[in-house]
Amino acid sequence: MSIPSAALVDALATSSSLPCGSLQIPHKLPKVRAIPTLLGEVAVVLSSLLVIGSIPGYPILLCVLFYRAWKCDGSPQERRRCWGWFLLALAGYVLLATVPVAVRPALMQTRFWRWWLEYMSVRVAYRDGKALPPGQYLFLMMPHG
Image (tube, rainbow, N blue to C red; front, side):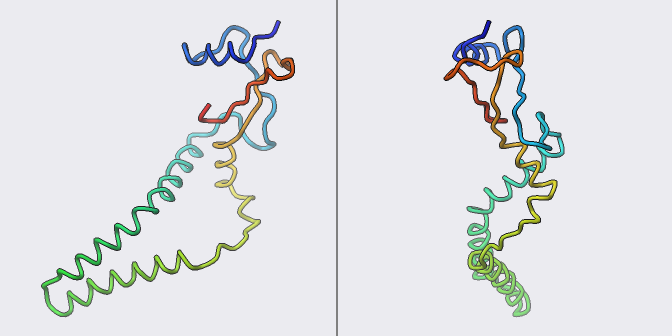
C-alpha cells in the first residue's frame, strides 16, 4: 500500500512528522551524508553569510571609510592613515571585481565542497523502499524541503 505524495506533503505541513511506515531516502550522491554534520551546517551558513553579506557590505564599508577620510580633522599623519585605509579597501574591491575566477578542479575534492553538496542535495523519497507509482514521487530539497 502506497501513500500518495500529496498526502505526505499534507502530513508534513500539518504535523511536521511523517505517517507510520516512515519514508526512506535511498538515492543520494555517493560520499554525501543523508544528514549533514553540525560542522558542515555551520560552515555553510557562515560562508553564505559572508558571500551574501559582502554584496552590500563592501560598498557600505567603502562609503564609511570615505566619509571618515573626508571628515578627518586630525594631524596630517592621521589624515594620511584615514585615506590609506580607504584606498586599500577600494583597491581590494576593484581587485575582487576585475580578477577573473580561475577554474579549480581541486576545490571539488575539499571538505568544504562536500558540505555544500550535503546542504543543497536533492533526493527522492520512497515509502518502505518500494518505488511509488509513476508521477507520485516526492522530491526533497535538503534542507529547504
